[in-house]
Length: 245
Image (cartoon, rainbow, N blue to C red):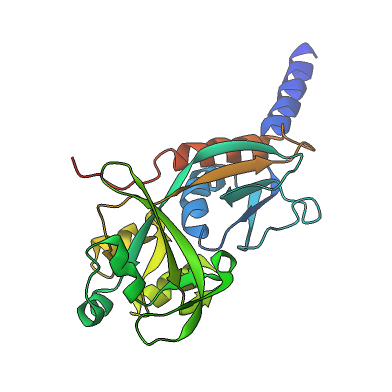
C-alpha cells in the first residue's frame, strides 16, 4: 500500500513537472527561423506539448492573446511582464551585388546620400529631403553609426521605398532595390552566399536589445520554464559581426 501511495505521488509530481498543452509564443516576423530550432528538442522530448507561434512586427496584446512567452526587439513599452535580456541584434548595411555594380559602392558616410534607401515605415520621419539621385522629394530617416575609432556619426537619408516588416525589407534589398539596414543574424547566410554585400563594413551600427517576456500569471508552469531555458540557451549563440583587428 505504501509503495502504491509513493508511486501515485511520484506520478502526480511528474505530471505537474511535465510540460504539456499549448505553448503560445509571440515574436516578430521572421523569428520562426530562430524559435523552431530552439524549441525542436523540447517538442521532440514532450509529445504532449504543442506550439502556437504568433508572428507580427506590430506589438501583440500579450494579455488578450493569452501569450505565454514573447520575444521583442528594441525598446519595450511599460508593462507588468517579466523581462529577460537574451542578447543584442546587431545591424549592418547591405545591398545586392547588382545594385552596387549599377550605382557604385559607398566609400564614406557622405556617399550614402547618393543612393536609393529602403526602410521600415516606423523608422521614417515625415520631414522631406531631396534625393540627390533624381532631385525628388522623399521622406527621411536618420542613420547613426560609429567609425573605427568609435566616433559617432549621424546622417539624414532620403528613403525611396518603405515596408512594414524586416522580411520584405531584406527581400527587396536582395532584389537590388537599394541599400537597407538589416539585422546581421537574419542576413548572415545571404552574405556568406554572396546574395548580399555589406556596405561600409568598417562602420558599426546600433545594436537592438532582444528581450524575452513572460507573464506574471503563470511564470512557474513547466512549459514556460522549459521554453525560457531553451530560448535563452539558443540565443546565447546569436551570431555577431567579426570586427577587423
